[in-house]
Amino acid sequence: MLTVNAYGATSATAPLVPLTIERRDVGPNDVLIAIRYAGICHSDIHTVRGEWGPIAYPQVVGHEIVGEVVEVGSDVTKHAVGDRVGVGCMVNSCGECDACLAGDEHMCAKGNTQTYASVDRDGTITQGGYSTHVVVDEDFVLKVPESIPYEQAAPLLCAGITTYSPLARWGAGPGKRVAVVGMGGLGHMAVKIAVAMGADVTVLSRTASKRDDALAFGATAHVATGEEGALESVRGSFDLIINTVSAKLDIDAYLATLRPFGTLVNVGAPPEALPVQVFSLIMGNKAFVGSNIGSIRETQEMLDFCAEHGIAPETELISADRINEAYERVLASDVRYRFVIDTATL
Ligand code: NAP
Ligand code: ZN
Image (cartoon, rainbow, N blue to C red; front, side, top):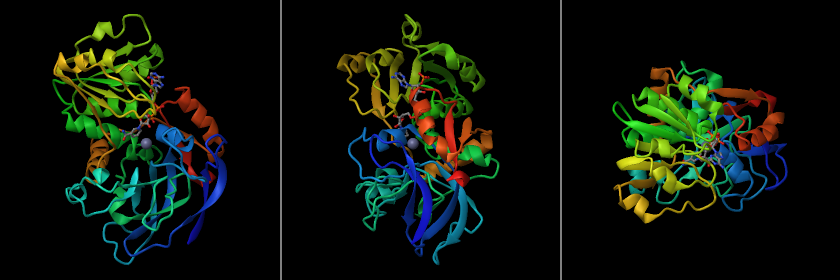
């Protein structure tokens, strides 16, 4: 066992505090990673505050992890000491079900083992990336290309893959009009990736405050949805909408902005239900679907795509003692566009 410094929650309501956690001994297929940077995802906040259901405390979250391999198990072949690597939202899966055998570990029939707040194979609860070290099965460790700046790489492991996957699956590319709803951590990556794929991108954000940034990221238009008649102005416009909003949203109003046969993909994960009028779908042969992160293969594809296209998240580096302040700023949409923790400060 390795005792490591971390920052975590002791209850759903108390601020996060410094604490120590145990990491398992490095097994034959494991990699020990010295974490350098960890991103703050809105899912971390939903989880520690019990918004998705009760969890066990203490709980360390964080599933946007980059660092260096410092030890490998005897049977490890994919990674070597010194490699720059990443870990995203899952750290294991059954490896035997149809989904796992097809390379869709994130769809594992037994449920993949999430990087935090999940029951690990040894029965313990997984602890996430706001910590100095993590031990992970080599199959769930990604290679982070050297050309992606170290400090900026971490958010790709969740915000990057969660937006890349539906954009790729639903064919964002030349000739396609894509709208991104909500421009936070996921949303700003959705814009950059969709632009790099060749799509025409519109940002649907509540106010005009992020307009300049949206255009700088390559969007051709920005609509301030809080303004009167805003969604009416883009009625019937889009082939594909990626909704990244972390709160309840009037889905019918957004479905009306799709063209016939268009698709609205929900990646935002608010605890509340998102009701839909059936006629909002039937009348235009429209689809309202969800998307959950991405497979390990697709996550590597996304990292290589970002390296090839020179895409990286916009980040604000913070010390660990600013995590609670960062949470409040995420909730107030006062983040441009992802907080990243410098784990040397843990
Ligand atoms: P974030 O940085 O907080 O961004 C969310 C954005 O949503 C905000 O920047 C804001 O954009 C908009 N928004 C917030 N509250 C709103 C409200 N009440 N009404 C309308 N718009 C609102 O969060 P994130 O880290 O990108 O995560 C977004 C969501 O995706 C979370 O629910 C998270 O749990 C979920 N998630 C899902 C997956 C998956 O696999 N499906 C993976 C990761 C995260 P504007 O200021 O531009 O309006
Ligand atoms: Zn996340």
